[in-house]
Image 1 (cartoon, helix red, strand yellow):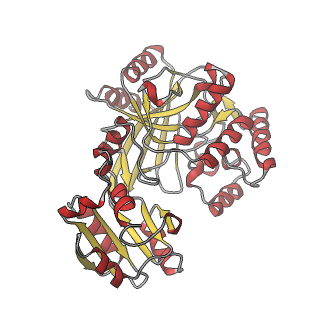
Image 2 (tube, rainbow, N blue to C red):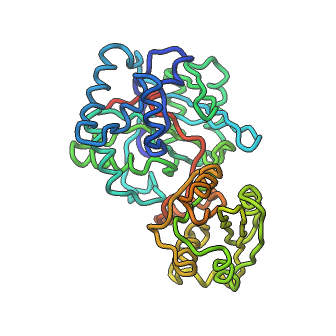
Image 3 (cartoon, rainbow, N blue to C red):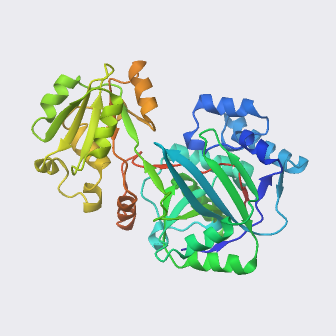
Length: 409
């Protein structure tokens, strides 16, 4: 693991009851409509600092000026001493309660070649440029890069549990009813124990690849101190480290009758009655590869790969990629069998979004997937390979603005 340090976090000087009005998810999951809702909810909402709301050059300048103004008028202020910050998120999924804890800290971004911080996906030029422009004008990190690390003997988990037994520094619930509790950790002995535990292991980027790439660019332009950025570190084996399915909607595609004919040789096919039944069937499948296709009528088709379907994959594909439903789908099914191009594919996080896309005519078919296991993500990163776009959706997302990291350089 690279160097990790405490820092004097900049935080909103508001009551817990007010925090939910001013915090936001990471920039890349905020739709334009939701951005306007957040901005209208409270004039101090952090969305004004993490997104270019006007969409032009002036939008970046405005974000920087707004951050400076809020720092000067006391809306935001730095803690009086360096600290690490323990974040706990409690949430429900399908009636089950989950809890995840992780550490917010300052750390140095590192090239993947050094083997200390490993990505699992490629970044896009437009997103990298946007993040760099925002970083340059605000000179702060508002959203931590989400990293996971092995905690084989559960030492970090035990230390986090002891910290969480005390009263929190802040707590609030977000729009998705995720309950957040934050502890500021300033005791030197505890800081030393936590940083020693993290320095001894390799970290894997879960979310925040573009922000990590931005930190490396800043390091290259201003020097070594430009690599300091904001991270959130959570154990790989934390029961609350949840990856949800990332579904696709196909804007153009053959109808289901044609699809059945094209998939019949390589897949076991099962009809389902509606989106919910299809989603349950996909999630329950134990086939090597499985996915579901649903039409606007509600008619669904579960496709489970027969052993012969492995021949659809490129022969030179790395084993870690061959294990992925998303790689199999994009390399062997969508274009080769169904004639669906990348331009015809959009991505949605939930069944509700898939239903809406079908109901409004935005999608010819909804394509439902299983969640990607964390172990497969680690295997891809260790092999220095990259997953197809939108292969993972970690839930819940980390809040922007809860603890802000001013740039060192």
